[in-house]
Length: 341
Image (tube, rainbow, N blue to C red):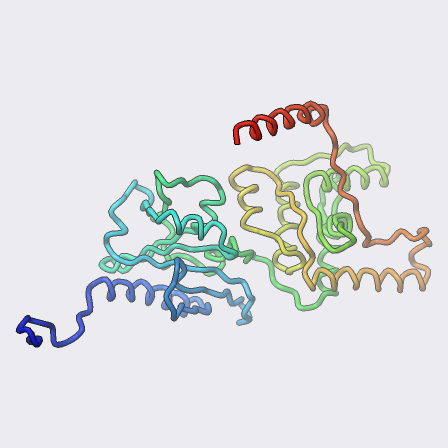
């Protein structure tokens, strides 16, 4: 210790508190995980407001994919004081809850325990968007989700990283769409039929839902003169969800895959969406059109009076009796809100 001009004791050197070391241990654990799994770690070098850095997924071929997630790292024993048996309870500030929920990337909260040398994680944006968390109960961080036992693909699941292999060639994508077909007699369907039949918004977007699936299957059965009625079981549901995974893996449309997983896992429903086509999706549409033109010139395809394989499919809103009854109910609701505002 030294003395200042007034004779008061002062430290001779800057003091580094324990919190600094603990924070670095957490960041270093994430950096080590990234290196071990061949991921790209980008730490924020300026003051963060709820995001400490980003990870980018690198595929098995060593290619950077552009699939990115954001991370908030919390390190120290104080974050492990709420133990509910199978998980740790993390209580973020309200401002961070709102910030993470509307963040454009999945946000992974990592809790690092310096003494145990272990890190636990949860996709906090996904948890809030599911509607399963509130301020009172905090965020559940599963003890089973440790960085040491997690694969890169699992961590990036809500960012759209799937098991499918990315195909460089649009021609290969087209052939895969055509060749991926249901083998069930009561469910004749291919990925290509779903893609071509789902094009909408002047062929700039792609629609998908169970209405498209059932309509396509029923038209196929009628075209084939089949005596079967459309039938769906677990295998058929997995087939249509596999189509969504294929679209994401091949980057054909800007699909919020994390939101699809909420429908699929939590609500046990087939997702429904209208998503803009990506550049690759638009390239695929052009490739379909060019191949169709070649087939017509060679006489393989007959004249179809201007009808194209890849053309706009109109999405129709079905008006139900209850919708008509809701019109005066909505008007009455508006009137009361205006009267009390």
